[in-house]
Length: 81
Image 1 (cartoon, rainbow, N blue to C red):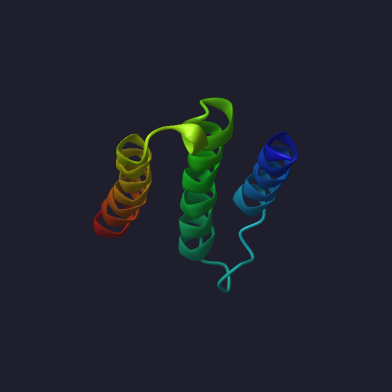
Image 2 (cartoon, rainbow, N blue to C red):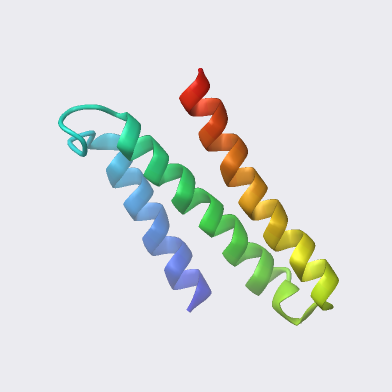
């Protein structure tokens, strides 16, 4: 299921990246959605392929915090650039 989700999310990201019709021709909404999808994909890989879903709570909390911080930094850098 995780592989199927990753594949589907990759196709969605690709479609958003090639068709910037979201937001009236502006690429900002599509770019922000791609950042969210990419971060969610990182989370899926960490949880299911690196088996962090079975890791001790502290390690999983650090990873989840990393994902949230990563998304915040990506969006912040993009909007401030």
